[in-house]
Length: 222
Image 1 (cartoon, rainbow, N blue to C red):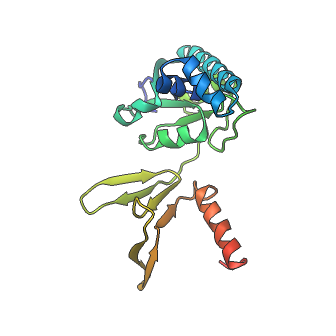
Image 2 (cartoon, rainbow, N blue to C red):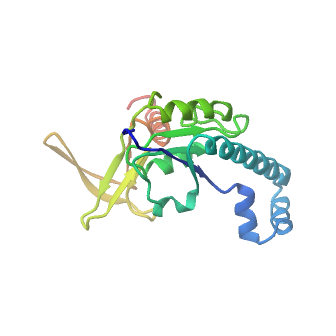
């Protein structure tokens, strides 16, 4: 961070399952009826919501002590203008961190797991008790981060798409696509539902599942 630049702390969050259900059904009683009708424990939704809200409030209190503060809900990410001096704190699951990364240009990201008993996360190395210390070191430029490489796809009409974990290239329907693969001067015609392009960061996710399935079909030959 350059001299004289004051950081701004952006707290990225998402709606809980409870909030999304209430938006869908208008009231909690209607949402609860839907859950119970489908034999889903409504109390679990309440517990998850309460823990997450408490963690967000505490994270906000911590961040406001250190620098300028801005809350940001996930749905506003595509239209939000991040500044070079921003430090982004994501409180949520792995998917929220991955989604946030797509809209950044080198700003540091601190991933906080709000409920370790419920969620595991490769992108969530910190818990709330770590936040003050990590933010201090990041503001001072003393933190040690890891860089990741995005996958990029460009279409013939100029559209551009970035993938943190992977990209799927293929038709939207369940039909097969015909395409040609070229590599080091060799070309091969293929027909399938599509291609998965995985980053190193995403290699332990969907791509790993595809490889495991392939090994199962081929009897261990890849």
